[in-house]
Length: 384
Ligand code: SF4
Ligand code: FES
Image 1 (cartoon, helix red, strand yellow):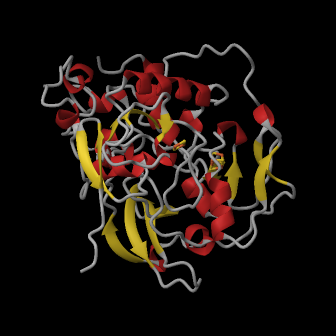
Image 2 (cartoon, helix red, strand yellow):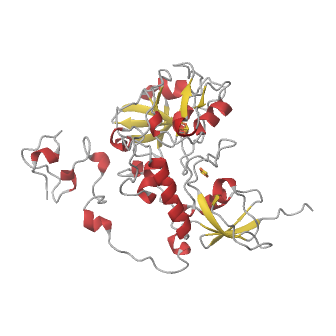
Image 3 (cartoon, helix red, strand yellow):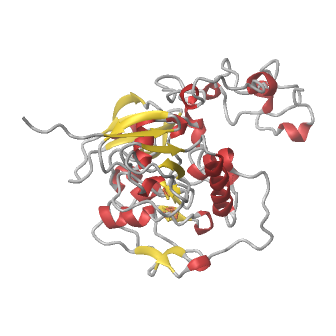
């Protein structure tokens, strides 16, 4: 009889899970799901060798293992530390971790331009999400932010180096998906930058995937640039018979009305690509007739994209009660009753154009004298 595989028991934020030896703390936490899973800005499970760069996934190991239950002296990167049998880990239950993560986010934002209002990644940016959870309301940095010379990466991909957090995901993607990587990190320390030696040289058939793995808005789709905000688009799953041997042609089409604004790979609940797609599918097939439509995308990730969405929204698993070990959370206020926004009866996808404060007022009718495209601040007549 074959020996049964020994499983390791690990407890993360008071929840115990059994995992195979060799599993990282981060992957074990993802098996529990919800807020117990630490944020990961550089680790990408589909790419070998990633992780260990950004430190957002730090956790506290309160007990190393059953055999040696001493705590680990420092916080560890959960993406690069494997579980041991009997290990006890604290993520959101550790003040040290929250404090360190706040510091990491402050560091990541030191040179960031904070240009979310004009950034195409806004609404699906991991750094934006992380800043809401762990960011400071203001900066303590008094020096000039870094600037870089512009590098032209060709017709499809726009590089904004000031937004880059040097996670190295795009390099691993190019290494592992294309036959020859032509971009890299030049220089060192504060001068490090993603660049190519030869302008317009990112040409490989699969290079578009670096847009999907970039956790911030440093690499964006030139064919979609400034055309729409992602939360106004409706994601729809579609496929086509792609001739490229390594592309299955399984994509998400992003519609506004009947126009396809962009095509991306499909992503899972951790924001990771399920199947890599080729440049032809991504950049050159922007007509509905190019595709076989499967249906609305199930947005399993808690995201602004699921706001006002119509079907298939899966809420993340609620783990708060388990984490609090049976205690009840203290509710300070119900943000919905205080702010009067995010009301379930208001369907953002029904609103023509960007939502205004008037769309959330007691009556949805805009006040007389406010132009449709108007800015409520300029008229002074917005609903109070
Ligand atoms: S460009 Fe994006 S993917 Fe590449 S290192 Fe910078 S943040 Fe990471
Ligand atoms: S995700 Fe672990 S160090 Fe970046």
